[in-house]
Length: 152
Image 1: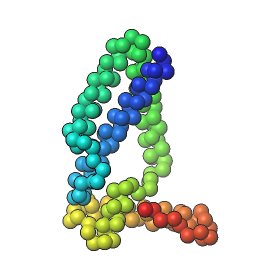
Image 2: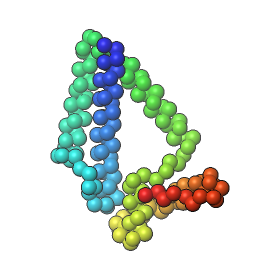
Image 3: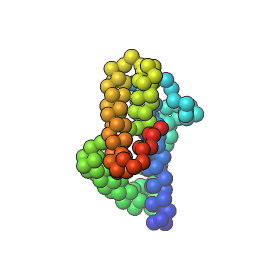
């Protein structure tokens, strides 16, 4: 039952994070003035919010199932540990590579189809700097012997 409780908590947490990321990605595209992404969830954000509500209800229900009730406090402690570790790494690293949205913004800026949006322009410029930094690090790592790999 211990392994089953950990499995249930892990599955719920994984899908919870997927749904939150989906909603954030969709809203980020809208905020940047980009067209809707080609990958869509049936029912859109409504389906994601229904799934999030159902998962929250399952989290609560786990606390009332005697043989699984231990999974909630241990799982939450583990998620808190991972969140703290993430933010510590984020402070140390400071800059991750460009995201899918960043790549698209740079491509649109180079093609001249960037939305007339101040945030989109600023983010595309920032992404271009990060892309150039990544290419520079690749060239330094290869000691100039091998050309850097394209990011797309």
